[in-house]
Structures are given as structure tokens and as C-alpha cells.
Length: 241
Length: 241
DNA sequence: GTCTATAATTGGATAGAC
DNA sequence: GTCTATCCAATTATAGAC
Image (tube, rainbow over the protein chains, first blue to last red):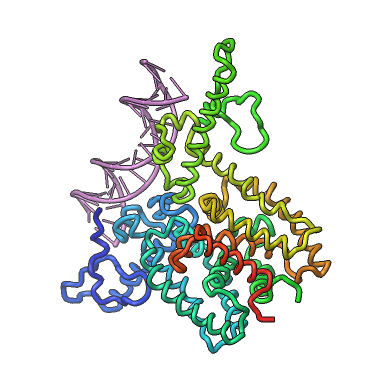
């Protein structure tokens, strides 16, 4: 299985955040073209890359890795199949890159939690933020879900590292809240699971939500109603007090 | 697309519940074999059918329709590929049959709700029952989830009919509880979504749960702890009272 | 009913010209 | 970088003997 080509040394590119490895560029000869021309070219390439990644996300998140053909992705990104294979050496590499871009987005909202905050406010806010993601990036949510269902073969490592340590840290925060009497006694893990579940549900089971309520989160009124209800259920519960 | 063969008139079979269409049987000649022998034969066939369906569920629920080959299903069910295709005319028909068997299981727990019950008890009980399903039939939960993510192309009709009417009916029950002051004011749809989400999460995101807690619902202690926490969160909420 | 070919297709990936 | 042509593997599905 050839995994070279597009993985070739991306010299000194921003290695920090998202999709790194760009197609190998040849910068040997003395700069004949103007700097701006080169930049334009680079931007063009980057645009194409993200067009492909975007198209791939849309399709993978609905039909999965095997339910999507390279051809379809190429068509949707408006490039030829072989051109796509110039940017991503093979299908799996494309898939992995799409996934990697996701993880950051995924972990983001949880980072907010800190012991100094008012728990009610922090959690209420978290629910809203996650619902915003479910509304604006349902495809991301779905792909994440798909990957989980399959046992997360390609995310397992990251799960064990990044996610795990983050969750442990935030669990401590929740425990502190409980210890301070600011929160009813609840196991941090289960609380986090509940928060994830109820918010992502509106993305992953979007068709069901639509079939039963007639609405989508895109409907502003329904969105607010959803935020309110989820917040109330989790924070106050449904037993009258 | 040939969809005949195994769909051939199953004469007078129980058309009501689950997977109906059995492979065409020839009952032309006068009954030479004893009745018991015939019955044994029929049972044998039925066993094979369900062996195939079971194997298919296991694989489809992990890798999806396209991620699973007929060969794999056949191997797992311990039949030959062509033999499998005798029982199910094609891959999609197999898939649909697996799905159909699921729906009943899916709707079941919700039917319990009735206005006479104590809501706290009814809902607490429902949570437990759903978690039992998540523990004992995680594959069913996953396949259902997979199908939803893909937009439920093969379940859409059933969604609109059966599920929808059932949910409407149970929404009325919840509304009645709220009106009677037995339940805090909450939109029935969102409550039902929350219940589904938090319980199915333990099946669909099982790997994540395991990665973060180190436990599975198969662990009896963890199961009870889960039931308790989910019940508490939904019923009492997490704000101290 | 079950098996052994085998037909028919899809789709991932490579070669090589431009 | 982009394209055309092509190879090759994997799979679905069928035909037809037993």
C-alpha cells in the first residue's frame, strides 16, 4: 500500500492545527516568479485541498467510507478522480485527513469548563454551544458518530490520548463542583455522556427529529426551544419541585 | 434489478409481524414424508434464515451496508455465498429484512407509557429498559443509528407511519402528566429525544464509553451505576435542591 | 437446497503524456 | 498539476449441474 507521494515533506508549514501535509512542491530553482504569484498559486492549491476535504466530509458523513467512492467526492469537489489522487495518495488517507480536522472542533467546547465558573451557567452554555455545532456542522457530528459506531479504528489512539486526558481534567472540575455543593451528586463521566448524547442527537438523528417534529435546528424558533428544553431537563430535571 | 426468486409467493404465511418471505417451497407431490419430518425440515430452514440474519446484523451494524460483503456474512453464518443468495435474493433485500426485524424491538419499550402510571416510575423504568437493550442488543442500536445517519432511506416510510403515530400518542400522555402537575413543564418531543439519546449513547458510542471509563454495560456494577445516574439526571436534574 | 463456475461491474490505483 | 487510458482486485449476482 503506497502511502508516499502527497505525504512528502511539507518543509516548514504550520504544523500546529489542522490538515498539514500538502502536495509536494518543488522550490529548487531561483524564484523566477514574483512572490505574490507564488502565493496566489499556493492559495489556489490550498483551496482545492479544502474543497476536496469539504466534499469528502459531506459524503463520508452520510454514506461512510465504503459507501462513498472517490469518483463521487471528485465530482462534488469539481476535480477529476486522478487529480484528487494527486492531492491524497489514496482513499484512506483522504478519510483520515477529514477525521483529523474534526477532532479539534470536537474537543473545543469542553475546554471551557473551569472550577471557578458557576456550574449552572457553564453547563447551560456548553449545551448551547454544542447545539450550535449540531446545527452548523451536522456532517461533522455524523461522521464522528459513524466512526464511533465502527469502533473508531482510526481515532482510537487520539481517543485514548487527547480526549481521555481532557475528560479526566474536566471530570475533576465537575467533582469539585459537587464537593462544593454547587451540583447534585452525579458521576462526572455519566454527566458528560449525557451532555454529548442529548446535544449530538439533534445532528445524528436529524431526520428522525424532522420526521417527528417537522422542524430542523435551522429553524430559529425551534433551535431556541431546543436549547431551553435540553438545558431545563439536564439542569432542573423533570420532577416538579 | 432482479428482485424475484426468494420473494416468490410464500402462500399462506403469517404476514403480520417480522421477516415474512421464506424461500419458495415446493409442496406439489402427495405428502410422502411424515408430518414431523416436514416440520423438522421447516424448522431447519427457518434456523438457517435467522442464522444469516443474525450474522448480517452483526456485520452491518459495525461496517454498514457497503462495508460488509455477502461473503463475510455467509462465512459468519457458516453457509456458502450462493446458498445465502438462495435465501435472500440480493444484498439489499437481506439488509431490509434485518432492519425490519429491528423496528419492532425498537418501538416496544415506549408502548408501556400510559397516563395512569406515576410518571417518575414510568420514565425511570423506561430508562432501565432501554439501557438493557443497549447492553443486550448493542448491534441493533448501532444499525438503527447507522440507518438514521444515512437519512433512513429504507426506514423513512415506517418512520412516518408507525413511529410517528406512536410518538404522538405518547406525547399526549406526557402532556397530561404535565397538565396534572406531575411533571415539570417540558416539551414531550424533546423529553423523548433526551431519553433516547442518553440511553442509546451507551450502545452507539460504546467504544468511547469504554475508552473513557474502562467499563462496558456488561459489567453489572457499571450497568447499575449507569441506570442510577441517567435516572437521576433526567428526573432530578443536576441543580442541587 | 446446495454447490461450482463464471459473467458482469464497480471502483481503487497507476502509468505516462502533456 | 492535470489529464487519458488502463490495469487489477474485489464483489455482486447468475447459470446450471447435482
